[in-house]
Image 1 (cartoon, rainbow, N blue to C red):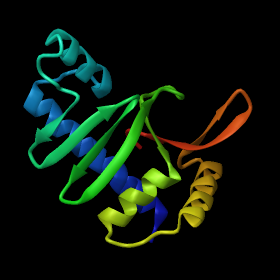
Image 2 (tube, rainbow, N blue to C red; image 1 turned 135 degrees about the horizontal axis):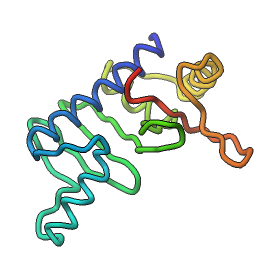
Image 3 (tube, rainbow, N blue to C red; image 1 turned 180 degrees about the horizontal axis):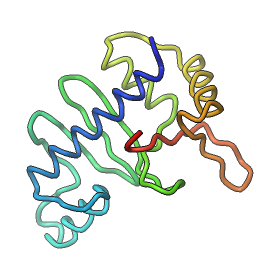
Length: 144
């Protein structure tokens, strides 16, 4: 399994979901998470935009991110602004769940984490480092 391709597919899955949500809900802003929060606030909670089903996607916004499932493929991520652009923040476990459901395979979490660290050193993704502490979270730019 080519890890770079998995990350590319992960990103594409999210972008396709966001495009569908934008079209169906008439959203225009780049920051999908903030758009959903605004819609929910405007409805005063009468319509729960934070979760639902649209065009085969089941989604639930949570904390700082979203869980999306379509046709058995599971994708869980956070929105982050650790770098200049809005990015997707993942962990090895979240990517493992995506890979296992997208490719119908079983991946090794420890090996996956090692590959993610190597990709961060290569500059393909970024590892979350805050106040000198290194986390097992990684940033994927929305557009690469």
